[in-house]
Amino acid sequence: MMRSSVLLVAACCFLSVYAQDQLVKVSLDKRPLSLDQISSPQRRAEQLGLLQSSNGGEDIPILNFLDAQYYGKIGLGSPPQDFLVVFDTGSSNLWVPSSQCSWFSIACDLHHKYYAGNSATYTKNNTKFAIQYGSGSLSGFLSSDVLTFGSLEVQHQTFAEATKEPGLAFVAAKFDGILGLGFPEIAVTGAVPPFNNMIDQGLVKDPVFSFWLNRNVEGRQGGELTLGGVDPAHFKGEHVWAPVTRRGYWQIEMDAVKVPGASSACRDGCKAIADSGTSLLVGPTEEVAAINLAIGAEGVVAAQCRSLVKAYLPQLIKIIATMPSDQVCATIGLCDTHQIPTPARKLLAQTLAQAQQTQQDQIPPELLRRIIPAEQRTAQKADQVQESSQCQICEMAVNYVKVALANNETETQIEDKLAGLCDSLSFLGSSQAVVDCDKLSELPDVSFTIAGKEFGLTPEQYILKIDAGGEAQCISGFMGLDIPAPAGPLWILGDIFLGAYHTVFDYGNERVGFAEAA
Image 1 (tube, rainbow, N blue to C red):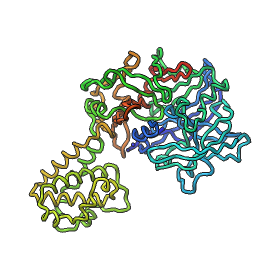
Image 2 (cartoon, helix red, strand yellow):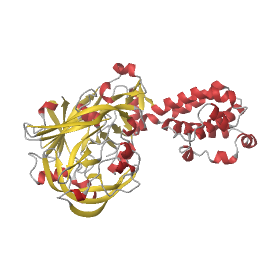
Image 3 (cartoon, rainbow, N blue to C red):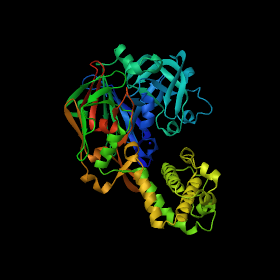
Image 4 (cartoon, helix red, strand yellow):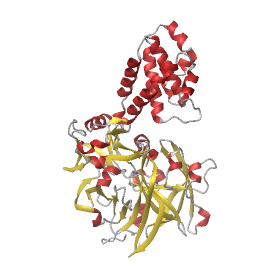
């Protein structure tokens, strides 16, 4: 499971647990958190590597994290050591941080850790374990112990003790680990997944589990994972069933994706997976770009790029002739080497570098050498620009303006060209896109056809409305990612879709069912 920037609603760590008729429920509070941990499709693709119910099921309440990730509580050991884990249908292993974490693992230090010495039922395994994520390899070793899952006790569950957790994503995460609910075929090291052990040990009535994800950010409960059956209170009507076409992920065949004003996506059918570990709706870049254009979405970075150009260009032009580049940028407050650049400014730097290269190609070499030293030109390659500080980015903008002014371009011409470059960046498919929040009622519905039935999403369902510093901002739930064959092309139906439609994962009959969520 994996997960790309603003504010959403998250479920807080304040939990109250109570039992009723052998049901285990967790009541949750919510508080605002950063949106930085919205799932990254790229990282997700790398990882994919591509209550006792009336029917006898066991419910595990799910916590609503950023309205995009959902997690709940499990226990490991005797007595149980509690962990918050993401219930992920896109992977098949269980892992939690280990007490033997590296001294340099900040993520491990900030989360609950498993202490083998504190468990009377711990069994040593010690097989090495590693999962590749976009930010690096999560590694550790295997152990075995009792897994407490709601009121169930799963004996001899093999799991990974993570000693190294890469990247900042795990540092900021509100969950401790991940519990995979995929098929055994994709389990790293061949460890038996928890749900398979539940089936083998006769702990669930039927080899079925189901998700209800509460997309109401005002709701107190994030959702529920029901083990051994379904809870009729969480859906309307009947489920429509699609057979699993490939064991591993919960992969099915999808017939079409339709939106008025755009050419039909998923023509002649396509592969799709139902993935509780993905936040958004992910599809081929070209198809997603067409959908985002049809719903009037605009690339986030392109919009921010134009905003930055408009805000700072007049100041740069006024003082550029009398000050060195670093002093110009310090004067307008952008030269702070201690400040990490935002993604928008990194991408603005790429835009400026592209624009500057275009202008350089049109200027005599003698004039170019007088304006920008050779060593500085060399340092402005795109791959290095991405790592530039805010100060360096500003300096590049200054250098571009110098070149443009030497070419006798006016301020309007410079701004227009930079704005055009911002607009030309292909972010509608591969990155976040925004829409005007005041125009949500004017946006079209989007439908996904599965097993011959259309499952529609309204703008209120596929648009994420967030609070960006006190100002409402609306983010498209569609993001593009090109997954190569044989795994792709592939659509990933993440929490936006699973939140609208109660989803049943029928392991016994190898099928996935969808019904309108209640």
